Length: 116
Image (cartoon, rainbow, N blue to C red):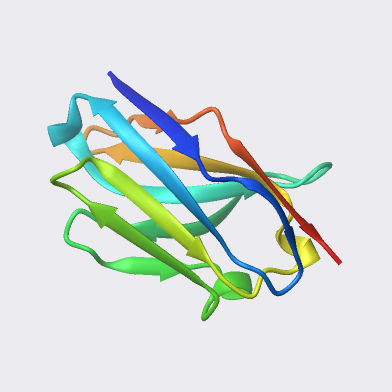
């Protein structure tokens, strides 16, 4: 079992920055890739960025060049640095851990609101 806890959301003006963090506890050794997802009101949850156990990253086109995902395996943490934020980035952001045996674990989510 894994437990994921996000922090760092909040309210920011367009063009500003926020940094999200995810702390992972539990059976850490089984984690393959980790990622950030978001869900805006009335929309489906969507991928923001993922990072594998060896540090390979992938980003949604909408955030490329603005967001940076990172992972510290020694500290069991993952971060998302978000720069040049836009109102359309407003959503609840979720931390995800995907294990080698196919299980997915989610955090409780953290609200990010970008005002215009």
